Image (cartoon, rainbow over all chains, first blue to last red; front, top):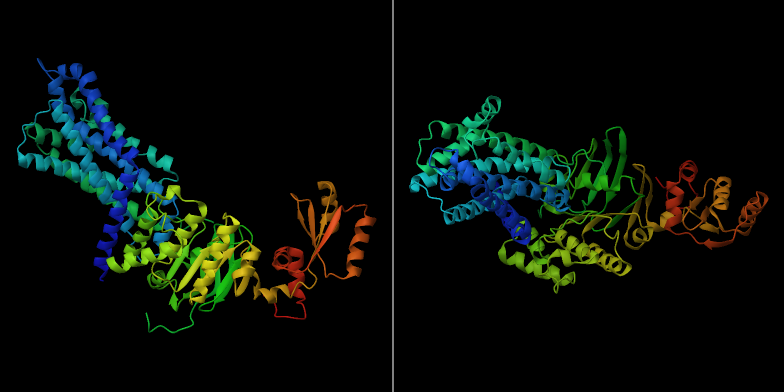
Length: 265
Length: 328
């Protein structure tokens, strides 16, 4: 077999292993999918009345539902990549990673297995959330092309954050740390246009919110789904995603190759 | 692979490794002939695991040269990885998979092909007595079963060289014997094995040759019989009534090895009546009363204490016993 064929084969084997893990560890999978749904219900039924009124005269809960779905899609992504970070750290603190390292397998296949597995898990969670949102009365003005574009943006951003989560999982000394560090993503999401318009924020915070990656991604997805012009948000969203993916990928590979090289036994 | 020269086993020359200021391996050289078992014997922290990790391409050495089955570990790690199998000290199994899935994972990663892979998995499950548990998750496995599966995973692609890092640590006596049997069968089948252990009886039982590693240096090397021949009279075990007496006695006899838990002092002795009388007189004069004593003919324990306890090691190195082969 050629090197490329080996790499593909090894990555596929690792992906299958990763998907099996998700099925065998259902409590985490259910939690990662369930958390965004609980938050969706919370935002729509608890905060939604008042937040909706803030979107304009004669607006209410149903307007806010349409506003907040993109934010919840990003919560879904953040929640899923927290799982990635935990799974990677569990792998690295277990003994099996050393076995992989002593075998003539494509070195990065362990990581690509995690990335592809997490991407599939994220997209499933996103689909479930959209289904629930429709059940609650979410209505989209988007045609098939806009839907495709919106899902493409979500998937690309998820891909970038998954690599970041892989790096965080590799950098973590324990599974606990790996589960905590991705919490910063939730915080960033709350400090973006995901849940309220940045225009309502005080100046300093607003500036921060406008120049961090979650805002253009949320605005692009919202524009596409609600049939509103997206301006250059899409370019910013794609640029952020590619930038994060490249940096996180390089960081992750570096951590993976270095890991344990200096660890006394 | 068939074109490789035969009898290549494992050869390591002057391997050094430090972690920060701490020198873990100090010019360690060893050779394992093809189809034989070498036991790397040493206490915790001696550097055994580090040596295995270096030879199995997990971490780089600072200096030294190593060849495994004819391949250079530094220049050609992937060639080395293709012929070795490693069973580490901590179980390298996937806890979220079943036994059969773990083995299948290895077969897939070794690119055995669908049919050959399945056949090999079934074969190994049978050979390691795991057929009944094949489709159970590993969380239901006992320690012995996990260790057997761990080794079975190492053997999926029938490696020519195997590293076993403390393969029986933590196993009950019966699982241990099963493991020994499996290791012996592997050697009989022509596999080259480097195993590390802190159990002397394990080295005695399994190894063709033993290398004793202490504080990063090989302090003795030879067949079990050669090593034992250097400790002519075995030892005397002195049992004491309390820790104070043990303490006084061990101060009196610095070459001896105290065991605080059992209140026993193990004194190297040649087994003659005169030396025994001398020993007892010395203790009596110092007012140290001995509760009872037992006399042991030499076994590897004696070798171990002799070459890893600094006093005796120096004596042995400076004044090798007349019979047998020099130790280092």
